[in-house]
Image 1 (tube, rainbow, N blue to C red):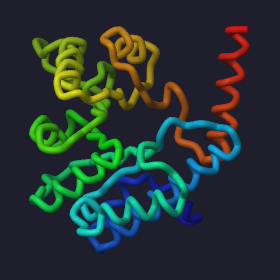
Image 2 (image 1 turned 180 degrees about the horizontal axis):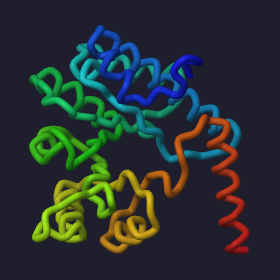
Image 3 (image 1 turned 120 degrees about the vertical axis):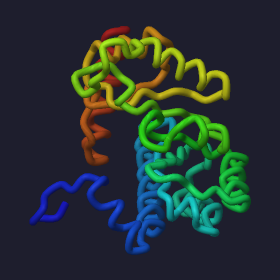
Image 4 (image 1 turned 135 degrees about the vertical axis):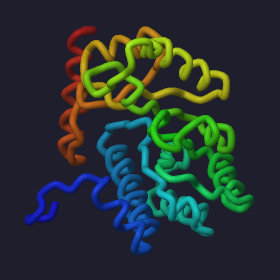
Length: 227
């Protein structure tokens, strides 16, 4: 965290990194750091199912993508099926045959591919039909709340979410609801069958050591209620 600027959100620096040709380097660093952290948690008995890492435009277009992922898994000692690569398509991607083959190779190696921010920007059905996504992450803009301004006769948010969940089921993808901030939103996505959710209602972003303490506290709380 830079002393001058404080905590800088990804939206403020990822685009800059991409524009100066450092996007793939940044992704590689984050990938290796995340997988090593996963291995460190394993060593302490904290078992996280898998870790998600954003895959930017530069990385998706890089000819050595498969090798980079394989090397990161090998260096960290982490199996490929513990990794989820999240594709964020704020701009239309140029998916050539070699790039599609690389993504398919990752899926064949049991890496989970997730379509992030589905329902916002270019992250739409067209991309869902071109890549082997295992997870569909619903953008918070699809959830009801004060952030969502709509016309009087616009479709109900519940109906819209049900349709998206049905679409995901049709292509065999899991669904995660992003941006859950209120109990009402949590109850809604649970009612319509969304199995996974994330957002500030559960916890803010936090460093690895703080997450470990938070996780263990939750496990202890659940154990206490079922004892």
